[in-house]
Amino acid sequence: MTKEEMFNKNIKIAYKLANRYLTNYANEYEDIKQLALMGLWKAVSTFDNTHAFSTYAYTVISNEINCYLRTVKKHYNTISLKQEIKEDITLEDVLADKNNYIEKLENSLDIENYISQIRNSKLNEKEKMVFELSLKGYRQDKIAKIVGYSQPHISRIIKKLRTKIKL
Image (cartoon, rainbow, N blue to C red; front, side, top):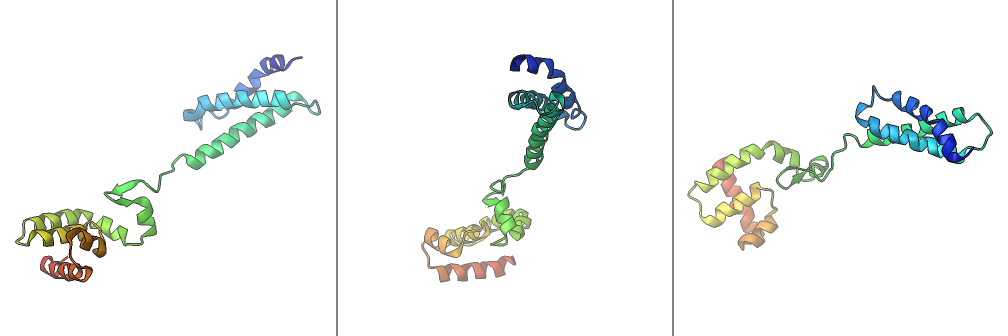
């Protein structure tokens, strides 16, 4: 008997095993059917006549399907750590919490209010820019390069503005 004949003769085994997974894995059912057929072909190709073919085929097909389902379950609800939660804040940053990103995330709604207060205040343009950049999470040395002041001067401006706005 050729491999093709053996495959066609035992195709019902593959479908029978695939149907066992229909109720619990309806979304993956088409994939499971294909894997069952691939498992059957693998069983036909590697069969060595030491056991009954149906016993061997059940084992190989079941292993193929279960291996696939393990990988699907592992990656089913995977979320990328690079996913942005808020502008310039990723999930990875929040989990690492190096710069108190959780606190920044919680206060992100308040930041928008503070920025609007700053824009409507009587501060000069550079002071407004300094405070806006600090609220957005920029470090003082980066703000200093952008604005053209020294880092200690930026620190004094931020401290003075925080006491005015009571942040």
